[in-house]
Length: 228
Image (cartoon, one colour):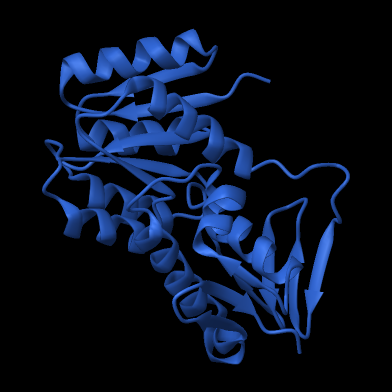
């Protein structure tokens, strides 16, 4: 089934370049050149993934991401943010708001298509994998991508969901940041350790007091999900 990608980018040259490369990979592509139009398109069309620039007319990318993640119709849509080189603070804020990945301009269109493929792959659960995971009163349904703590459902992004699967399926064993990058993000390179840390922090917050400390930090190495 063809996946649909929405690009929200106000620089025409960049928008056209991304669109061309994604269409070459056989994706259906939607485009918007301002924030308000992009948000409206996302809500109406419900794409499989959004490539979102931070600096936009009408509504900036951070506000769009925040709005999408608060809407039950769109909270599940993965987001790849595009940022300028000097916007590190905004990148971290974007991850905190629920973006699944980011790329710094200027970037390789080929690398972006690989990132898109990797993020979309996180939404797929292999038929050979187990369909549910139970840890105390924490329950994961892998088919529906839903998580409950007791009777309360918690909403995770695609990346947070995959990260929790990786940690909980290997509980009692340390997962290095490089291992998590490889298994969850699908790629490794310098500078991405902070991305792992940010997602782990968000995951702990969403798990709440009852299970936040089950995700243990192994200083200088990575993370471990407590066995008991």
